[in-house]
Figure (tube, rainbow, N blue to C red):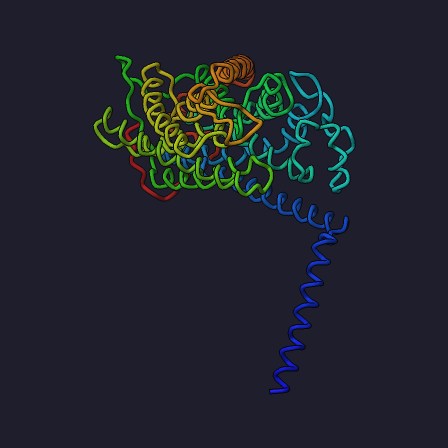
Amino acid sequence: MKWNRWAVGGLSLLMLAGWAGVARAQEAGPVFTQEMADTVANYKITLDTLWVLITACLVFFMNLGFAMVESGLCRAKNTVNILAKNFIVFGIASLAYYILGWGLMFGDGSGFAGLKGLWFAAGADNSPAAGDAYQGVYSAISWATVPFWAKFFFQLVFAGTAATIVSGAVAERIKFHSFMLFSFILVAILYPITGHWIWGGGWLQRLGFWDFAGSTAVHSVGGWAALAGVLLLGPRLGKYRPDGKPRPVFGHNMSTTALGVFVLWFGWFGFNPGSTMAAAAGDIARIAVTTNSAAAAASLSATIMAWRLLGKPDLSMILNGCLAGLVAVTAPCAFVSVPISIVIGLIAGVLVVLAVLFFDRMKIDDPVGALSVHLVNGVFGTLAVGLFAQADIMPNTTGNGLFFGGGFALLGHQFLGVLAVGGFTFAVALAVWAVIKATLGLRVSEEEELRGLDIGEHGMEAYSGFQVFTTQ
């Protein structure tokens, strides 16, 4: 019993001493040195950098999706050509954006274009210190705390996407080298100039135009450039009957088309959430869900719309419906709620079906529906910011859209941005296409087109040794 009394007494003293120590520690406050603060900050930058690079790689992976979608929706005799264009376009974009595009887009300068830091004239090398020194030259993107080359790579894969959009719309009749030249000019000059307006501190950004991940900056720019090319190229041989009615030209492999759309859907979780350029937990989670919800809703509404108008649930319409929802939610994904993203997707799915039928009636031949997906729904997604944005979702950004009491101010800015970017891109792209047509030529010969661009342009077949039956 005596031993127990001593034990209890000793334990009580230890507990009293512990409580006293805790009280003193609470009075003194936590010990948090500057060295610890620097370590935490460095860890955050590392995590943010990993996030940006991983999402950039997802966007890069979308090149495979585009290649599968476009090749599957075209005929077997043009498969090598489509794959070659989708492959080479990212190589072209990488060099064009490095040589000139980045500086025009993010360099400090006028409201029209970046003028400083062109051709990396400030003397960049691959060291982190040199990347940090660019904060003063490329101030429009200084808000992102990741290293310079992480910023550059993330923006590069977006530039490559804009050029890839053009490939499908001009498929099955364009000369390979003419497409290569246009792709270089698009990524080196056209895309970065309008990108500067929107993301690089240019006049639209200062005005209050918002495009979170690129419904206009990427998708409709690619769409306007593609439209200009399609108008100068004209439709494919046999696309329209003598009475002017469109003749269906079926894709040769819907399996790869569906695979490609799955890849693109997956890659969009880098495209939209990655545009935070930081591992901001709440934001990236919400943006991932708004992105997915719009795609799902658009797939369903496109299915119903195609079933209603065509009599069958056309798979190509279903797949393009999914892509339309993804494009439409790209601008507003950070500024709208999940229920509103579903509404945006439902509208996008209807729009893409109507747009495909409209372009067919207008004899604007787009083999893969790129104009309907990227141009039409890029415009709609941009306007959706002005309609559906909610100020409390991402404070200090857009404010409220029209349907949430914000009036017409934001919608007016969005509409002006659509007109300005569309007018500039279409006019300049049309001029570039026209010069290429007058010098190098745009369209392959009639014989090459009938035989297939794989043989005429590349001297090989995608399915050598297989018997391919075609009526066109």
